[in-house]
Length: 422
Image (cartoon, rainbow, N blue to C red; front, side):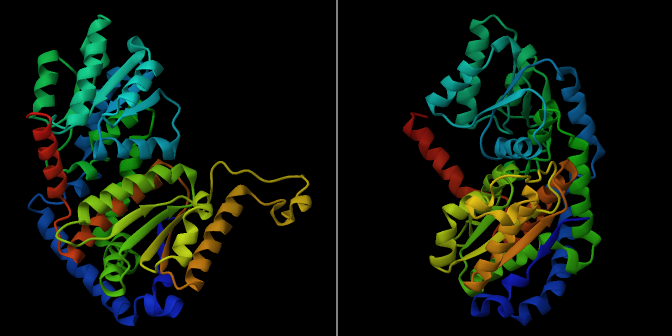
């Protein structure tokens, strides 16, 4: 089974004037085919480079070559990176639950975080992985400087405890790696940070965490094939990428709630927020992604989603077959008014909660769609990640913005540097 997108609750028959009409559905297939032609033409000129990663055998070979000598040598991995250099890996590790070294992420300049990570690790058993294409991101540079100092004080060789992931030819981190003889892995220059999880930025540390990165790329390749040659009606990334902006522009749904019903996908919501918000929020345009997790946030945010301002669309995600799953046996269920769950699996319970929430949203005229994953493994996760990246590209076109730059973020960085005396 492949990932499927159900959009029936985004349409007027389900949610009335808050949904899209027959004209939007009728125009969808021709729009997808038109955008596909644009996508193919622009990819021929080197744009949308993240879509080429899945079918590029050299990507996998280079990552395995860089990581093979380091496998099994460390008890701790400390990732030094921020945004696209950290959220993607955290999403992969949280979703796939590998049995490998303990992961610590330093993605902020908060001194408490530095101190906590230093306390948690043994330097002689730790691999530090700075991730930055430019090597100029202050959060990453600060972490690199601090932990380099700690290694030096302990008399440990940097090359034995550091893997630099950066631009193949230039940048401060590339220069640092070459001067200290560090092993390196490369981020393709044409792939932006928030689209880089399927480059060495995400896959090299994932491989060291014992994640099947070949399966991730195989799943991603299925989505690329679907979005290139598949039937438009089954092209869920294009459908999501075109309809979410249309709901924003024509129905005032200025926020998109992303709510997977799986604790394992909690970090996917955070990763998607950066992908969607940083790609689309430009020139007074865009749609704010709001992270949520079912069923936990049924007891916090759902009240707002159901009875607050009707300015949101919701994207639910559900896992059809949970692995492992647990069946609820004998207990005093009736005493707690919960006899209906006896004999059910927890997978059945959480999927019923998702379906119930979707129906409640529909009854309150809150447009919502559901992505169904057949199960959650590395291959399906790769399929999902690539699909959400492609959906973001389509959404950028629909909003009329460049989905790959981030001028406002760069402005904030320049101001911060000046405040510190640069």
